[in-house]
Amino acid sequence: MDKLLRSKKNIILFIAPAFILFTFVLFVPICQSIYYSFCDYKGLTPPVFTGLKNYKALLHDKTLRFALKNSIFFLIFSCVSQLIVGLFLAAILTNIKAGRNLFKNIIYLPCVLSSAALGLMWMFIFSPKLGINQFLAQYGIEGPLWLMDTSGFIILPMWVIGFVCLWQYAGQSMMLYMAQISGISKSIYEASYIDGCTKTKSFRYITIPLIKPMVGTAVSLNAIGSLKFFDLIFNMTEGGPNHRTEVLATHLYLQGFKHNKYGYASTIGVILLALCLITTGVINKFFKTENYEM
Image 1: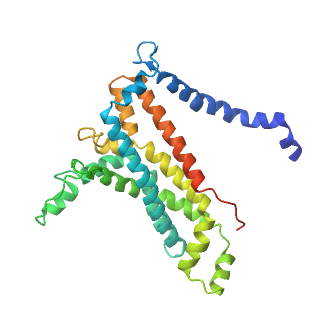
Image 2: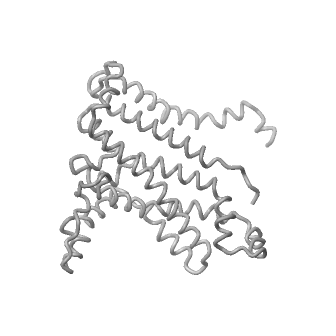
Image 3: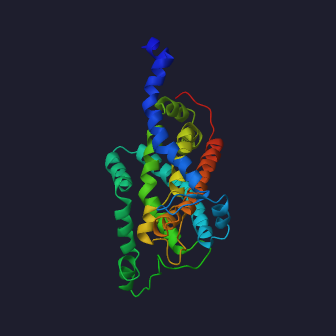
């Protein structure tokens, strides 16, 4: 087997299918999108090269400013909230035995459900005359316009959608952290308890440093997912009211599939790709750690 794996021809043979799939499914479309971003392209006619016209148009796009602000909000909110909640849930479920699998499955269940269906469900829950507001009205309380209030720098619908996103995807972070925590040798904790360390201190000084690589992975996944965020917003608000809940992905969809501005939509896609690459690089730099023997 070692002789087989040392052969360069065999290595190339093994990686060739994945490389070909990656090239035609991911790399080629990215290159096409970058080219289309410099073109006036409406889909039905051949693209016409226009240089930096689409990029200049971004500077005067008011909706893009809303979308960029909301995407950055989701980036920060998702990374911070899912890191805290995911670690908290992982720490609790790791230290209990009775009902661990039941609670783990319940918390993780929203991750595998359809985001489109969940978006419609939460849209009815936060409807002005249904769901929460209907329940509050029974006690004489007038509920807010959860998905329509546009006051404030970060409007109420963005906070609502952010907490719905946290509810759906916190289980994903929890599962990643639990997998890493379960790989830590129990002898390390036993030694710390003998030295007088409490469970709180052992979590702070042993668990967190040893799972830091997984924290970096989870935060990277959350960051990229939040920048590409589309389905929940589209089903709950469709970017409204007055485009105030647009994010980069919904604005891209609006320009490309509703206005047939595929060149301009490709420009937004390039900006989104650049943000994902920059964010991933910063996170990997921040969470760069040495490997520890566990």
